[in-house]
Amino acid sequence: MPDFAFAKPALPRTGALVLLIAEGEAPWQAADTAAGGGIVRALKAAEFTGKKGQTCTILAPAMPGGTISRIVAVGLGKAGEVTRLGAEEAGGAAAALLAREEHATVAAQGLTPGLAASVATGMALRAWRFDRYRTTEKETDKPKLAKVTVLTEDLAAARAAHAPMAAVVDGVFLTRELVAEPPNVLYPAEMAERCKKLEALGVKVEILGPKEMKKLGFGALLGVAQGSAHEPRMVVMQWHGAGGRGKGAAAPLAFVGKGVTFDTGGISIKPAAGMEDMKWDMAGAGAVVGLMAALAGRKAKVNAVGLVGLVENMPSGTAQRPGDVVKTASGQTVEVINTDAEGRLVLADVLWYCQERFEPRFMIDLATLTGAMIIALGHEYAGFFSNDDTLSKQLHEAGEATGEKMWRMPLGEAYDKQIKSDIADMKNVGGRPGGAITAAQFVQRFVNKKTWAHLDIAGMAWSSKDAPCVPKGATAFGVRLLDRLVADHYEK
Image 1: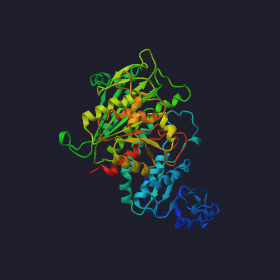
Image 2: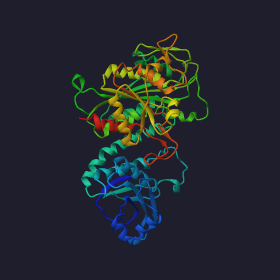
Image 3: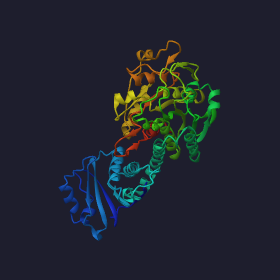
Image 4: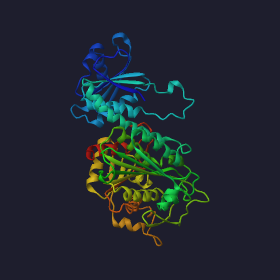
């Protein structure tokens, strides 16, 4: 990850130069003059127009001293219509072309200080790389970018805007790291210990083990975990940013994550092909951890709680069987038809506990819950369900603003009937038709009429290709989305 700094506009003497250019606008005059008009000529030859997302690289430009290694032009789109997300994506596009540079200077003086800070944010997000386990990689294959200087007229304003953005980036990186870790390294107890590190940011962290959860009646969560040698955990994270504690404190916002650190499917075992991907079946929990880090890191003026249920779903002689009936913390019983529909069982107990203990203003859960959601929406949108139109609108807007897009899906009594059991209060699957919806209907039974939204991020937790602000791999989908939701609507 490069270091970022802000400076007054001045032509750099070394490294790479990034020019951010809107449609119909000329490149930085000082740079083009120094290049003897060569930048304008090169961009014209490349048919670069400043269209959003368009890039052009000029290698070894003829500049004074001959030490500028390359110029990277990035299109911003129509002048005057550049959004925060657009600036981030421009920064990400630039970062993707600068991996072999050690130092880059970004000419962002034509943007507001906030947008200049957003360019730096996009560059940071795109430059992230998980290389903890690379031991034989050649030096020529490693990224070299170590320092980025962003040029802006108002240094104080840019730095002030960048500070909270950097805290959110740290939260995103934490989530990506958790999701990328191999399952032999990141199991429930280990992930719980990593959550504990949030105490350094002022987050109160509690870790509950099997004994505590058994006393609370977590029959559904413990049933999922009983086949694994790794014991389950539930982690409760509290951030008191709005001031006050106890009965006089403002009701917190609650975020709940599914944390299946590896999912074989249990006795209803998955096919071998692609099972290695199931290390990221804890991406919902990972997003909650990263969100709590982001809120605490930027000192968000809000009370928030994050709860994650951490289990490993394994087949063994002690594993839960299809046909078992478990009793949840709510007292409701569930007939387990398919042990691979385990995430909803984890959420059932954690959501119930959350509302009973904290009486939150709303609850939002995140889970890589169903393959059916991927069939419905692919890898372009997450699906979400909610019992509240206002919260739904806010979530949709936050998704559009951050590029973490979601599509609202229906809930209804007809779907609810599909999970009716012959011997228990409900069964954990309702058949293939509407599979993502019946899963949400199941989760809703443990909400007890609280304002609630369920985010099925199965298609968005991991990316098989690069995006402007997201390199291939763990995406941390949900962190920026929910941070924006809080910032726009729920802080003091």
